Picture 1 (cartoon, rainbow, N blue to C red):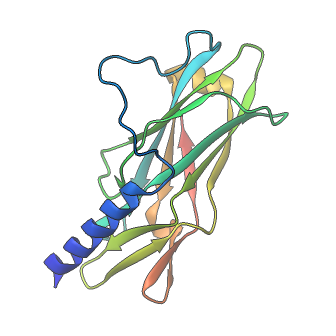
Picture 2: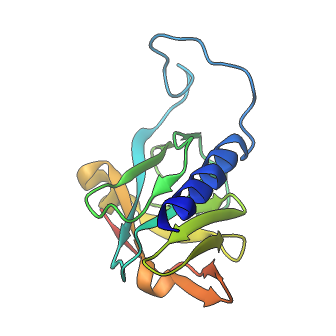
Length: 179
């Protein structure tokens, strides 16, 4: 049963990997800048890490969109780097979600991460889908904190964030941001 569930979750993950708005065209190989040469600002990383795992063998989610704006709502340049489902049960792994540029003079940014509609989970006695449509991850980041290490790492609390709804789980983000 467990191997069958892993196969089903793997198939769901592969299917989700094909979703999410990426075009079917292949990118050119070789080095490519993350942003256009004329883009101005300090570059930062956004990472996602699952923490406080209550016993899941697997918890897969995929990011659809990353949005970073100023306090006034001005969109900042972003580059989504996460193209495959992320395994949140690997406590030592902080997955690279994307990069963003913050121009000089901005003191705080608003970050929003939207997931694909569904992910998947498996525990010792059950498995199923994670409904990630409920709410995106949202937080504000002071530039002074971001500048210390050049990144923000979202610690997504799996115990509090994955709420049971029948055989499915709802992703109700409970998070802590580390800089």
